[in-house]
Amino acid sequence: MRAQRKRFTRLAFLRTESLSVLLALLLTTSFQITAALAQERIRPSDAERYIGKRVAVCGQVASANFAARSRGRPTFLNLDRPYPNQIFTIVIWGENRVKFGGSPEQVYRGRRICVTGTISAYRGQPQIVASDPSQITTD
Image (tube, rainbow, N blue to C red; front, side, top):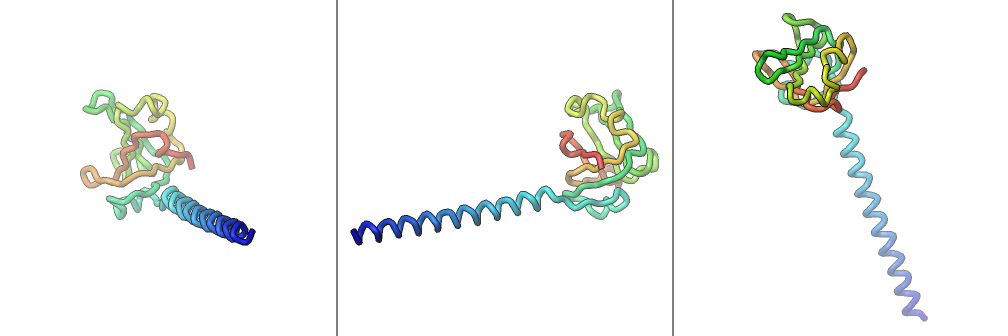
């Protein structure tokens, strides 16, 4: 009887210890996911200081254009200042347009949006290439 009780106590301890480890693992994972989702939000005018970094850039779509005859058929969404005085551009390549409902230049024109991604530079101007609609949210 005593050996059986000792074994039961040991099993209960192991279960409690296993649950504690599992709970710690779940909490750590959830904090990591939350940190990854909580991107730093910046203004388009600050974007050039974040080249190479993954952030969310938020601003008003000041101009939007689908360059259907250009190579790659890009759509350009310029935040806060219109082309040719743009300070930040979202580029959606033609191969991804269908994911955005077919006409992102019409969907987002004039709206306040945030785009999440890694900022790169093209001809000295900061940009984010958006390949999926989940990268763009309305603010």
